[in-house]
Length: 68
Image (cartoon, rainbow, N blue to C red):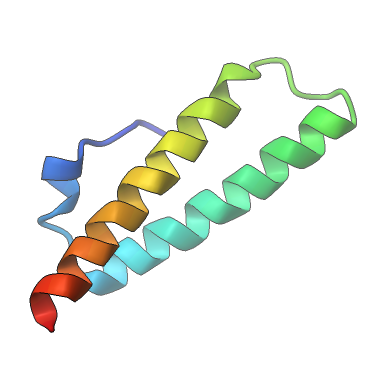
């Protein structure tokens, strides 16, 4: 999954952001699971996914604050 900037994500609807958050949480779970079983080769992907999830949550919070 390619990383997106917060600037790009600000154009998404709240539904799209919620779907992205759900997918990233599932990916984080799968990455942690694969790491614990020794199947994960690219451990840097965990850090990248964590940063992308944080970026997504930041944009969601910004949208909720603006909305009211």
